[in-house]
Image (cartoon, rainbow, N blue to C red):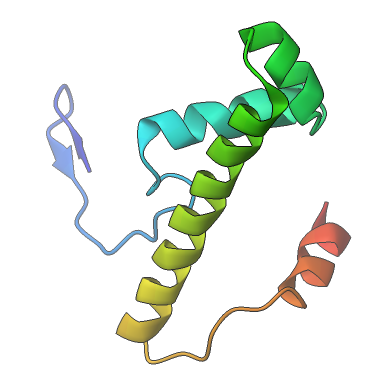
Length: 93
């Protein structure tokens, strides 16, 4: 990170969000999904496409995210991430 006006530079390993690592179109879909309250039907109606089309896009996002997590875990020599972490996430909100 660098601030050009003050000429300060900071170098470190900053962990990136898993969602930030997804392709932009997947990030946009996640935004739509959250703003639609998780309703694929609502997204389909707003986009003028069929429900199965929207579901297919969600499946692609899920697959890409799982592959990203698995690759990250392999690099860190960790065991696969499972849903029990969801309890910690929900408690933190």
